Amino acid sequence: FEMDSTFGITGEGFAILAADASAARSILVFKHDQDKIVALDSHKLLVGAGTAADCVNFNEYISKNMKLYELNNDLQLTTKSAANFIRGELATALRKGPYQTNLLLAGYDSTPSSQNGSVSLYVMDYMASLSKTDYGAHGYASNFILSVMDREWRKGMNLTEVLEVAKKCIHELNTRFMISQPVFIVKLVDKDGTRVIDINNP
Image (cartoon, rainbow, N blue to C red; front, side):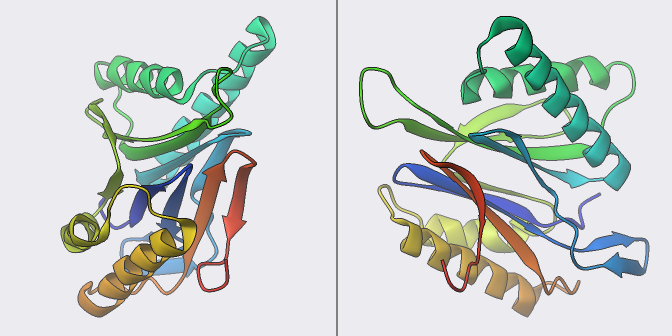
């Protein structure tokens, strides 16, 4: 449940989500190319840390319901609305059969009155708590990298600076964490949409 390493960081007009690419159960690692970050729509990313079945099931459930809402209403949910919808579904499931998944939601919302949109990052856990933040992490990784982000993050960082912080987080995990997670997938969301980025060659 805590073995997945996921984290997110906001910058000036964008946010990144990073997740380890290991698919494992118990003492066995199946592969190192598992993409755990889901694009909910053109400008929103969601990543879950937890039981593989719950993460996949819940992420698909949220993704398809948001698409259904868009088709029915000809309107995309804002990142804040999506975060509250997800939180509501977690709260409902909590009283029936909880999803063992801790989530990070990153999104970019265009503002009609301005050329500059807004970016936001939300942290949620399986108990249906919700918090907007500038950076966050889930899993055992949070014990190692939250202090790195506390020290390194500042308002108005550009992409190069944010990726440097991400590299330091991954280096800290590779140095201190007893579980080997050799591959991380990093995705970016900004005014141009979502995409995978090479952390070493952005």
